[in-house]
Image 1: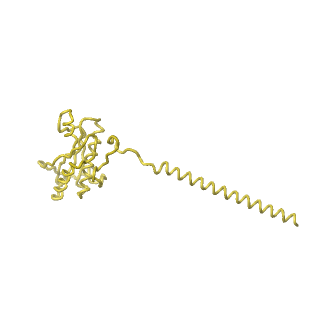
Image 2: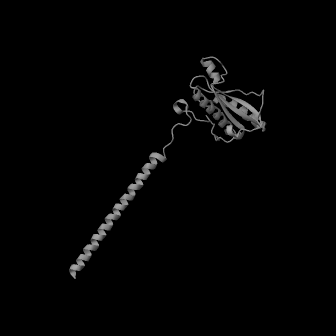
Image 3: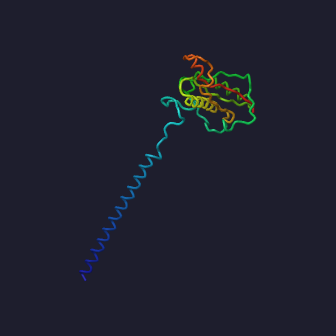
Length: 202
């Protein structure tokens, strides 16, 4: 009887030890899986994408919108959403917004020009504007086309930040195709780095 009891106790003890060992191993396996999943998330899912538009500004310091230009940059209201009954207004001119070389930043000296456009649009609710971006001749055609669009978007974002409805602000890029000054010096290049305003009735 005592031998049977001892065997029963030994068997129960061995079973308990095996269960405890399996439980510990299972917990270690679960923790290992969780740690691996967490590391995978950190290495892939949380990684920021580099770049953006091909041909971004050198050094990546510039951002669309420039100083104070944060606003709605979605495609709604420009290009694809351009009004069908657009009628361009001739003879209406505002000062061009100038840019530094290879930049989309709106400098302090240029903000007043955009604010004047915003004031005109507020006073004329049936008028919209097209911001046309231009570059100097340096750089490839593709690079300058993208840079001209980013400059136009920066002006658009600034106007939106001033309270203008993004749906009436269109953008267009000419890159280096329409220089204002034909020269090949810094004075000519400075004039060509610009955004022009074209107004329309809708």
